[in-house]
Length: 577
Ligand code: BDP
Image 1 (spheres, rainbow, N blue to C red):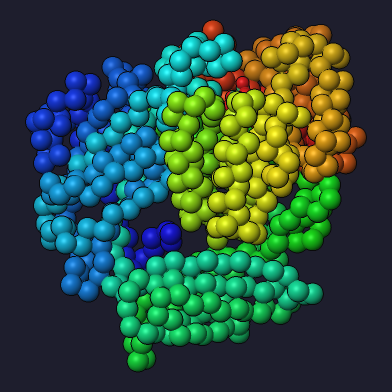
Image 2 (cartoon, rainbow, N blue to C red; image 1 turned 90 degrees about the vertical axis):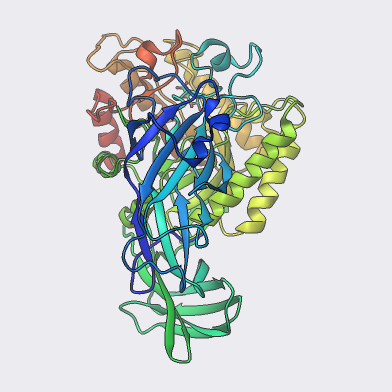
């Protein structure tokens, strides 16, 4: 799935703006035919979550209707082009109508979907209606409203009752794009790279929508490297780049790959894609980038900001990368759902390694709804790999965060997802972030271990002296049992900015510093630990509960408005040593 772009053969228009929105708690819109348009909407910004835009619907997750009108921009031509609508992210279920024609629906909040609209779109006065619904349900992923069970404490005690620890923001949260491509367009590109001596080998698979035989010319701008092949539906070429400038966090070199499709000397289509030449693999106890051991320093994060909720805010993306660079991080995990395409593009450009996670947080394995949860997760794996497979920054797939894996059904569930992911992409390691550690049976086949732990916080509270040896013992036990490298994907302490204590006490800035410093010391003494991701880059909004003062998770090293706590300065020292 190629991200839309504009060039002499393609066109993309962002439908961002003030749409109209109507909350529909009684479900009257279905009977009243709001799919054909409705009166009485209030202005709502798209893209953005709806929750923080209004003071009267913050916790509402039920049905809402959005609508907007648009004209076909100059240059769009339904006779010669295929026109589609692409939604980058709508949480959670979206159903879409154009001019009263139902286009389809999509489940899942953080991955793109599109509908072809060529036969339905008018030159002027198009009416686009989207029904969105974000209820928390046990058979959705991520789940919510899970029946009472003491093991699922977030679900028991929080409002809204999510089975995960971040606010369940809803709405049209990323851009909606009107896209035109030529009828015979390039449908997809798949780029994989290898290193041979000092050369880079770039394999490019070209897929086309229907059309007569054409020639695909593949080249790297600024080099003399190119190749061409005949293509009807699918074809592959291999480029050899002598003296290749590899992609890595220290030097995130990108090449501009251009694919041009031509027939009888007429160019039909062109697509340009920044690519990085790099390899990533697990060998023994090490994670190797370009054949050399690499250590991940960074964070779990959230797409979260006041007022816009989980909406795309490009300035916040730039700011977060600036803070991560300043502090010395080289990586992050897309906790707990895929981040925007824009975030991934900048990771490529700025040199961040990304553990790319599907939105499978809070998974549980009770039989009811299990099959449905699996099929939704399979859909997520397919959509994520289709979206992000060409990013050099995406170094690993994560197929879950903290599943409640103690039931026997967990292992076959993850085996299924692992096999699917491997069949779609054999080049990247696959993992999950575990809360059951040594009992996570799926680590027998997953490529690498990821562990989340809060010794000195949720357990051994306030007693790092007690907690650290337990963590050490657990790391060793996991290494002993699975003999694979391990990334510490979460650890941290809630910290009230400006609250101080000596001796360090929970919630003080000093305690966060003390905990992170001690954890780091432990990781350095275990060579099989290949990464440390602090929880969290910034404070972030959650549901309300007794564990979340002000409906906030305060484990940020920066505040929600991106100001450093003491720990930010400490991490900067440690990571820049
Ligand atoms: C872990 C979860 C993460 C939470 C964190 C915490 O993976 O989403 O926010 O704990 O409690 O269990 O702060």
